[in-house]
Amino acid sequence: MLLFFGNFHQVRMGFVKVLKNKAYFKRYQVKYRRRREGKTDYRARKRLITQDKNKYNSPKYRLVVRITNKQVICQIAYAEIDGDKILCQATSAELPRYGLTVGLKNYAAAYATGLLVGRRVLQKLGLDEDYEGNTEVDGEIVKTESNGRTYFVDEVADEKRPFRCYLDCGLRSTTTGNRVFGALKAFSWLQP
Image 1 (cartoon, helix red, strand yellow):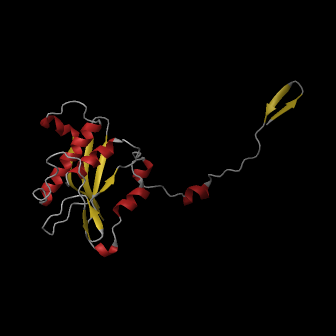
Image 2 (cartoon, rainbow, N blue to C red; image 1 turned 90 degrees about the vertical axis):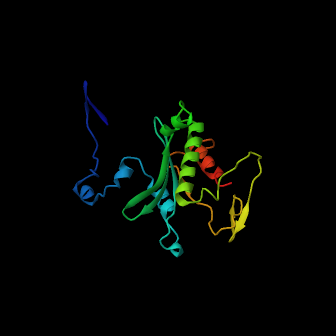
Image 3 (cartoon, rainbow, N blue to C red; image 1 turned 90 degrees about the horizontal axis):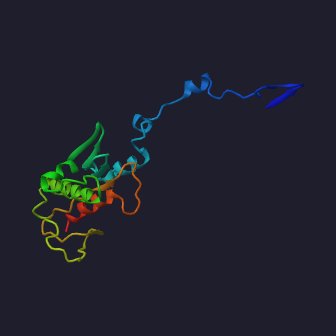
């Protein structure tokens, strides 16, 4: 507010109540550290890791896909009380071993990394013999109904059901054509 007195003017502030006083800071509760750092969306995390109570202690697996400045990281993780446990992982930094030397964070690298982590988790769980993936490309979609659920795999005579996990893309936006879906597509392709 400007008040003019004769030939000169003088600036005076109006009365403003101080909101961040002692009482404000006494009652202030800081947010979780990873929320303050902007790394974790706890609302999405809660929905990803909460398991149905009738499934008791069975883990709820997540396909964690992170894209850094230099590489793509894919992990199979599950939550426990004392922190997340990693079942297996693959990074696009390993792809030069298989002949892909450049472009380690593009869509193709995300696809190849998803394929790599998918083979590793099936091998670790002993499912790689039963679910070997598509051997020839014919464009046919395979469906199997079991217990009211639809699985997009061939029916196997054993009692082993396909490996199920949920995509965890972190803070990345889930827009059409995002690279995290390349990793998901490769991972789901392994279950023929």
